[in-house]
Length: 90
Image 1 (cartoon, rainbow, N blue to C red):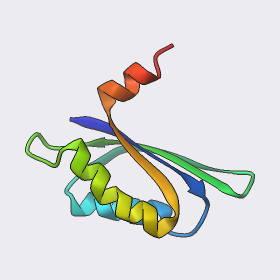
Image 2 (image 1 turned 180 degrees about the vertical axis):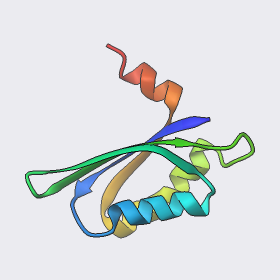
Image 3 (image 1 turned 135 degrees about the vertical axis):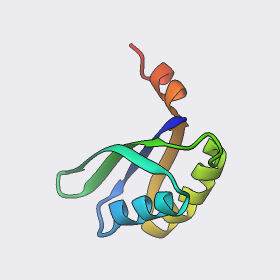
């Protein structure tokens, strides 16, 4: 299964590292990543991840990343790739 992880918040050191490490702990592969800092203040990141068929469900991944979000003071959302594509289809 593929999913999209989005992270938005004020920029600070360690956001990419902590999100990536949590995914690593869950044996989830990051296939692609794009991030930017807007106006030297706002951090945005989107990742495409792949999860083994016997890996954690979207809800479990989201729950695990919420502790990281709280620690960093950012918003993290995890969506199945199909849902993300449906929501962003023009």
